[in-house]
Length: 518
Ligand SMILES: [Zn+2]
Image (cartoon, rainbow, N blue to C red; front, top):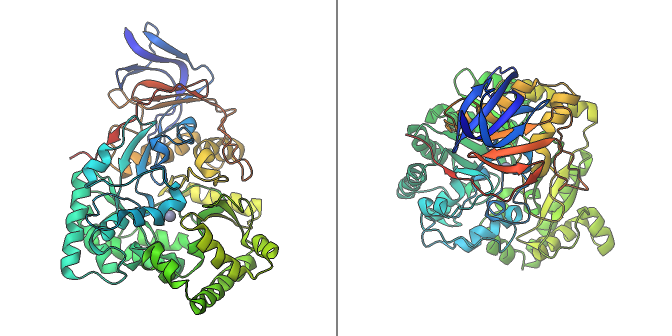
């Protein structure tokens, strides 16, 4: 038999729940998997010898900030080199389309900490036009309906509950995203303007998403409610809207395990996480979220008043005091001016001879909209290993990088997350079996987000495939060298095309925009 591409002599981990590797050849014709099994008489224009290698479906990242990288910034292959073949857009509810007469540039500015400045000029009139704007992609994308854009399109930066008419307008906008093919509804309740939404608003919008059969993916309201309170709100929304919930960047510990297990009786709840002992977000996140109300311009205007400046400096001081008591250390990963990279606020303060709080306010004014920090936690390695093991074992867990492809010293999760699961947690720590790991990186997210022909290896499904060496695969990216590429990922096939060969991008860009079916 003649095929376009043949992966010969490897063992297949097919991405399904409970998968065990089995020896098989995989043949591709066009953009589909044509055959899986012993194919000794098969021939193909491209043959990949995979003896000693594993063959898995391409990985799916449901929470990642790659909208500018996908359009071709210097990090465009950072995810693909790890075997990731599909990204969901709209993490934390960020999006910039369909906002009508509102000042979309200011919304874009408020998210620039995660995407860089000036790399994208958002002016898409509708969700459909936004999705059409993705082309020549390094990997596939599917959209989450972005709550930030949905609220902003109706209320702008207004920080009050929506009226009934406004709620109707937001429901209409949510339906527009769903009709354009969105595979879920995402929000980020520690960011304005979404932070101004009430639980009622979220229930109303989630009812639209539930009617379309897709999930609610929240970055929960931690800043205002604390972790337990934030989970309580999410679970209430899930119950009242009758919607499945996919909580962003959460893990399983003594606090969350009883909450998650308790919720599962009446809410279909899952979590995703990147499995590193550090987070990353903007400088403003050290303040109560109400301080960000009104958007970047309003923040700047308030801080022109000396009394306000003093008050906010005190808030920064309290927040930094709390975080240093916990042993955490923050450092700048991106700034508008390019200064202070790798340094903490305390280090910048001692050089300036000012207090941490005063320095933080000055930095906010100088570096907005672009002050991005990495927050490293002071978790002993064995404690972290136990936390990872516990999270990886929880049945509702899937992997997501939360990658930010921007800045001088980004969080290494963007360049290492998926490959590191295979190296650190499968091979070294034996925290999870290879079949289970691939399920949580491919089959599970595909089921969750209704990407029906992705996430598994079987004849007739889309040919998104990864060939890797189980003995050498890893994500070596570190805090100091976050852009180190993965090891052991030999080949990546995207919609039938060989896009990574011998660990290097071939330059082919065959990604597609995937839309929810039915
Ligand atoms: Zn988030």
